[in-house]
Length: 235
Image (cartoon, rainbow, N blue to C red; front, top):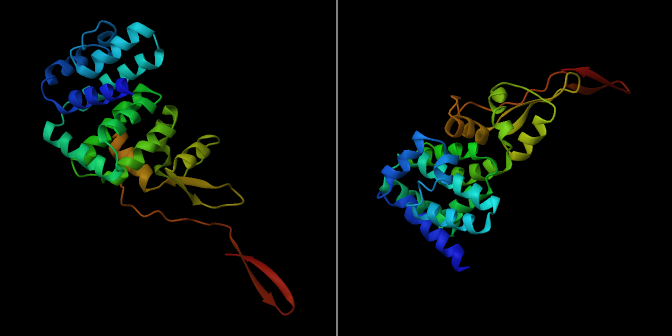
């Protein structure tokens, strides 16, 4: 328990302090793997602790967390200290839990380091007033659930679209809706509001987040009684 508390406290200090901004900026000059393995960022509290834990136990999950945290700190380095503090305050209030602990937990649960940039982009979008704190929380869950390969498929669903396997994953993640219900030619799907937010502010692909989300039902039939007979006709 004490080790976990130290991790949270060191993450908070690393995220909210401007003292290490120049050191964090050096991540951009080389790969995450390199700066973590050679200890170049051990002067950043959370990374020094995680790297130390890894060297003792050689636990791959600790190494991966260290890399993901380093990436997150680098990708959010442009956000001012005051904006980060306001964000963490809101994040704490909406969740009724310590914000830095929850954020570290989100980073830990993310299975692919390439998704960290998306998380950082969403934090920037919240800071800039482009998304609400509630939608940031929702999108964090989406990032956790959605395989990285399907981040690359999201843009296809700006229009009515269907792809075997991908439809089910995106539906379960809550980012698309059934936009065309067609028993003859097959259903189609399209990004819903949360999906559009993820595409625009998380991934950085332009889309109209306020566009309506209509449902089309071609080849539907209606029933009417003619005399004593029930007839069906296509609408």
